[in-house]
Length: 171
Image 1 (tube, rainbow, N blue to C red):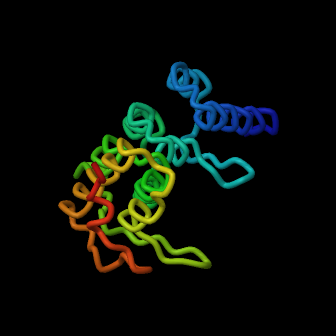
Image 2: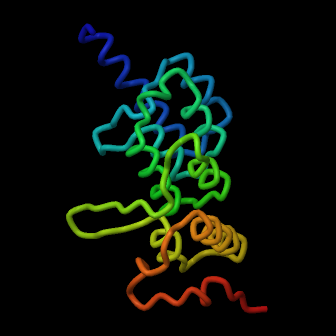
């Protein structure tokens, strides 16, 4: 690949990531196809178009990546991180159900390790819920149910979390 072609691919990746981050979803699939965007191409911050689409809860974009021209580039590791990213971010039940579809090989109890923490999708889904409205909390509660039904273990939840506090909404 020439230097110019490599730069063009990088700029295309950045453009799609910026569109996803800004919530500009209407033309993003068209851009992905026209620019031949690599779903796991990284920007300088290490973000990928696939990971951002998962975090932003964009099931249509995630599905397009999983079934599109570059689907073989999205390894099980990226799909599993997509599940965790979704639960860290907007938490879309549609994205969680899509990623847990048997054909994609994502395990609900996947563990993510970084230098400071061990995390799971379930843990990420339930840990950050301040400043959420009842609709967002209900979506997360539904995702907790999907994850536990798919085999995610509750024992990974730590820091004194009480599951009933997520599922109880004041009237």
